[in-house]
Amino acid sequence: MIQVSDLTMEYGQEGAPLRVLDNLNFSMQRGDTVAIVGPSGSGKTTLMQLLAALEQPTHGKIELDQQALSGLSVDELADFRRDNMGIVFQSFHLIDSLTALANAALPLDIAGKANASQRAKDMLERVGLAHRISHYPQQLSGGEQQRVAIARALVHEPRLILADEPTGNLDENTGNRVADLLFDLHAQSNATLVLVTHDMRLAQRCKRLFWLESGKLRVEDNSELSA
Ligand SMILES: Nc1ncnc2c1ncn2[C@@H]1O[C@H](COP(=O)(O)OP(=O)(O)OP(=O)(O)O)[C@@H](O)[C@H]1O
Ligand SMILES: [Mg+2]
Image (cartoon, rainbow, N blue to C red; front, side, top):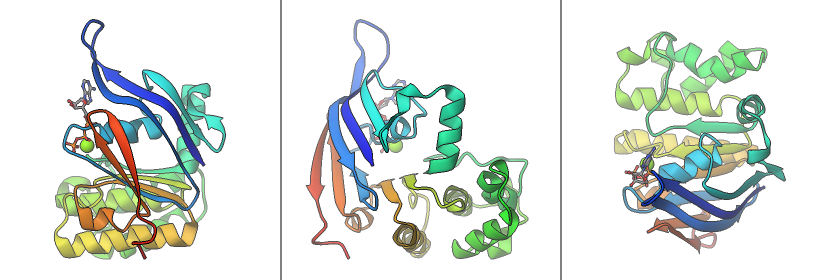
């Protein structure tokens, strides 16, 4: 489903560019669950942003279902992302002027889907926020904002779920509940789930572990361990 070839990402100017990702090659299948792990600054968020086509790589190619992301215009990319991806950012990127409900309904509203409000409400209920649907982001705790962001990312049942530290701001119980939700939804939809985490217990629930360090990737198959 996802094919990544010779992916290199450098930041900075000519002379001494900072090479964050160094010639990565990997693929992910439909239904895969992948945890990207590695030290702070190892390029996990960078890799997620490339997979989401929010950044362009310095070299290399990313294909999603045979579609090269670099072959799409900015508008086509926006449509492609809207139709196929659910993205949970490390910083939540909620819209301040919209309630929790309106934020969660946004992907359905933009796509002109019926029952947007009801579906968003159901999803907020599943992340434990039924009692906060009328709150605006600044009236929510960090963990609550994160759960709204997760509800928004999943509400339109995307085939690729990208989640950057989805439980990073949550207490253990809430974090477990959010993780259960991600894996439940993944199981129901047969989407590809890619998450970044520093929590090895969460990482171990994924079929594969992608270890990033010094620009290189080491893939560990975990399928016999995970449920
Ligand atoms: N826009 C940018 N311009 C220059 N350097 C950048 C930029 N974005 C990230 N970097 C650098 O690239 C490296 C990787 O950053 P990235 O955010 O991908 O790390 P990470 O693995 O997600 O870390 P963390 O676990 O702390 O979230 C860091 O050294 C960072 O300083
Ligand atoms: Mg990061």
